[in-house]
Image (cartoon, rainbow, N blue to C red; front, side, top):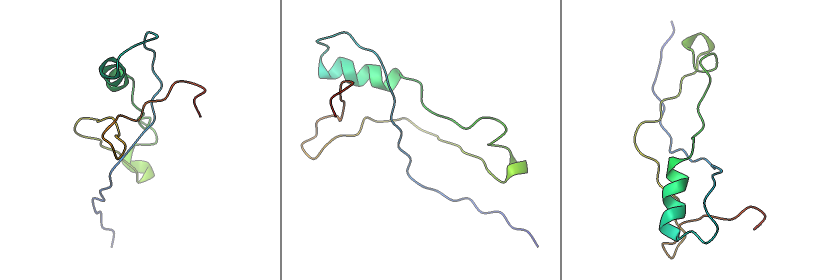
Length: 77
């Protein structure tokens, strides 16, 4: 007999985005939240493959222990 169960997990992703040089932290955070987030294609997310992915709700920018958003310029690392 087959069963189905809903599994839940917190998700995170990394997005790349453009912002003007000298942008404020608030402008960077806003631009990050407007960036395209990853999804599964319709083939990978079909029940035929026993996979689906629903990400419901709003994304938030990850913050470090001091409360500052984790946003890095290309080449910072």
